[in-house]
Image: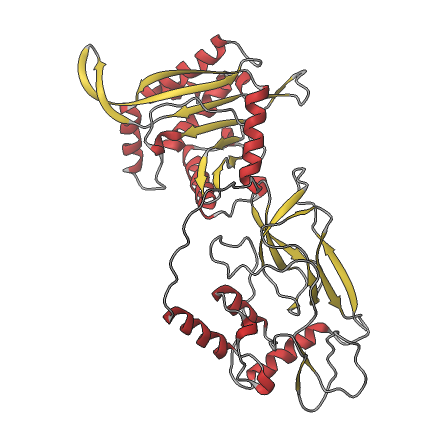
Length: 447
């Protein structure tokens, strides 16, 4: 007799106490394999898929989409066949045989972080739900209620349970979920009303041909702080409340830096971005001013000096502002920095950053020039002690070698925790960075 196993939300790391249900990846009554992702959740760090360690039939799932679940709270229950009994995976195979009688199809199984925005209709299901839709078996002996069992037989008979959706194939369920089709509203064309893939495809075609309803009128209301937005709000509030931050800035002639970039990109090899050049300058500057690659202890009684530079950079993604971290930036070449910055930027845009890629930074580079602005006084990324801000690079009148000329000018701003250093150190750091931007050859003295 199958044993019901309860799978609880595991500790996702970094001290997180809960996660918000974004999208269910399985339905009640669906047969799942060991380590198959069952739900997509949003933590304060990222959107991740949670795999279930049990294989069998999903008998219940807990929490509605948009609801926050605490670590250790139940996620799903799974009916698992004992080792000496019939395998639940055999039921999945039997289900596929039933559908194969009418059509040939191969289910696709994928793993990893899902792409946001490509999921199916959000179906709200709260609390425990009823068990499986279809039992594939020939019944020579009594079967416990609501428990799927497979018994070898010379012929396969489909027996539906009243009040539930007659679907066996995980592929059909997945297709319906991705296309937003309500299986309960369909009439199956298979044996004994079994819903086939062709039934779902016809429903999708009919849905596409139907007229689109007008968009609802926007109304005023309160938007709750959840997930990433809540975590960002809490972190910025703490930073503003606890850190005595100071900002200084300088206008800088970036013409020679842009010339260097064009020269580098004219040679074979990966393209070098302005952000990669600035990241390289920052790592050299932090080696010269190591006081700024630091953070305060949790109780504020001491300063932690970091030996490695884990360079965070502000990036705007689908989920909002995030700060991915380039590990060991001080040990990377300019090309390697550019490749890692590009990879993390792409992951930020599609929402696939992992919690590990969003934590552990020691210094932040903030390129707000991409928004078309010149300057800013950003809030420090707690518990870091410093941040370099970069505005847009724009042609301006500039006195160059005693004559008025049109040069490419950028405003650099530097925000620092006044507890870790005095203004002289901060000013020295910013001036060194500005000198490297104006005369990139200055870097050769430090390499």
